[in-house]
Amino acid sequence: MVKIVWTDRSVADLDDIAEYIAKDSIKYASLTIKKIFDQTLILENQPLIGRIVPELNDKKFRELIIGNYRVIYEYDRLSVNILTVHHSKRDLRKRNIVSNKD
Image (cartoon, rainbow, N blue to C red; front, top):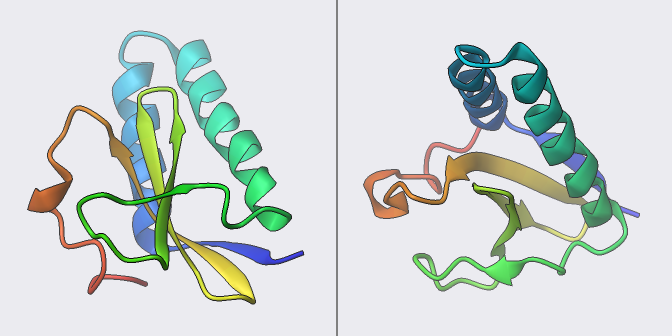
């Protein structure tokens, strides 16, 4: 079992997502964030379950698709570092997710 580490950026992403959704529904915002947290727990036992991030084309950067969001993480044998939670309709290439890791 590996440890899941949420970086400062990924936590900020979740805060932004919750804030945006809460403008219409506090309940749905809460359910969305809970769903993301719950579904990432699979990474503790199956860290390689996510696909390789196409934009990065590097085996150590993977992603889970959860609803409309891409949970992008880096696996290093001891931990899964969640790097960002990104809306799937936005262009990932406009974000430098690798070098701004917390």
